[in-house]
Length: 297
Image (cartoon, rainbow, N blue to C red; front, side, top):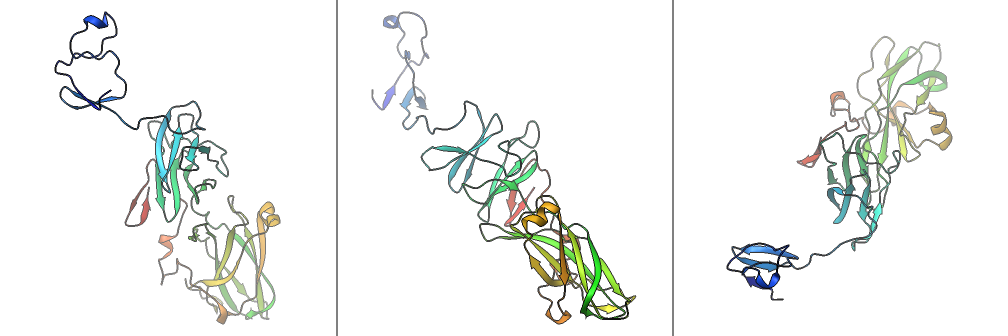
């Protein structure tokens, strides 16, 4: 069949009747044609079935990550083109299994690639995957919970002195992005024991913390008893929780670091971003976009 065909009396396709007596311009079989201009039809090239491994479902949304196609299906499953040749593999979620529902009725799942990661909006919140073949998880890091403070034998906190703490959790993803959650409420301890002491912290671990996360303890400068310590927190301890601590939901740390060895300033200090700019996990969102390198929900 020619690549182009001019039909000067376009009458459409005949589905009944005698094809011998069909009017001029009648298309008896119209397969893969498109109109290029009035009365001129072109055979479409390159249309073919693509891919394997998808379920027998309609595709609700087409997305793209690392130049690979992602299909969100009508049954709320998610598949990615694993080899660039149409071999589709199903995505998993670390907590929710294989279900990726849209945020609300009449909304579609939306996606965004940023800093090597891929974020999607779902009914359980913003999910993120760090590589094409990885598993999705909740984006961000949980905020620090409360903790208990106890004086123990030691030297850094002199008698009639007090100090304050904040605790946060952080995570370094597969694309070398360090993500810090919001710090906990500040808590202070005053030493009136009559001797120098160290401080023991009993830290409660929120849901979502894994052995890949870090617990960061930030301590203020030391003030006289009765004087509120300032918002000048600096890092005094950082470690990953053990599997046993995650199971128990609590970890215990003895702070023995002398004041002169405190480390990096906490990002919510008054001299930094301020506590009003504490990081929180992304909210439930119907849309997701990017503006000036920042993700917007």
